[in-house]
Image (cartoon, rainbow, N blue to C red):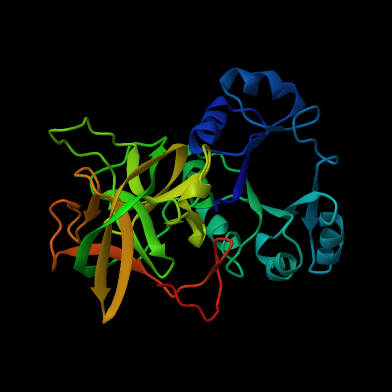
Length: 331
């Protein structure tokens, strides 16, 4: 999932606060005399004396001057969130800290610093505090923290079988985003193979395009989330994050607006890649489409044996949506 990201704006600069709000920051750190100014711009938690998150009460700032300060930080983080600052950013013993606590945020000033601290030991720090005078820099760092730009490896698989299987409860995921041509959600019967299901953003004679919607599959299906996680389609709720993926494997974080779960006739689609077969179930309707390697939408009513569609193939194995190494078979 995306990482928590605050933007520090001391002294007050309206344009930086606006950039933080528009970039999806989780909180803004300001001086106490700027509380009213933030409320006039938007609704967001404020880190300040008398604010929603109070310094030294809810969060503690610690300055690292040598590696031995790590023990103090770990001790404090057992009860409070800690924001780490340093006189020399390069000497922070971040690996040791991350290995011992999840209650850690780090002050960053550049995109390069953010990329490092968010990926150290793979899991990265719990969050970041962005301190920059650049609107563009703030936007880029927020994009990294929120998982925008994650790259997915998509490959083509050949359609082997298409057949009706009866009625089932299928899920339409209505997002708070307009999806583009060639873009959709990764969904599948198995965590080992997720199919790129195209958004309903094409014209057709029967219904008006709904560029925010992906008719994704039945309630049991896996759906890919940011940072490598998955969930069952039936688990998604309004306000959750979902990973929007295009045919090039480029991604951005979307927001779930609602689910529509309705009983509908289903089709089973089986594909083959490198002598292995994978399946997914979708509603039997013209508006449900897979995605070709060229980014074209392929309706299930026109899908034929031998067609190639995009999938994401991984080694199966999930525990509460988190990828794990174990012996597992999914059929």
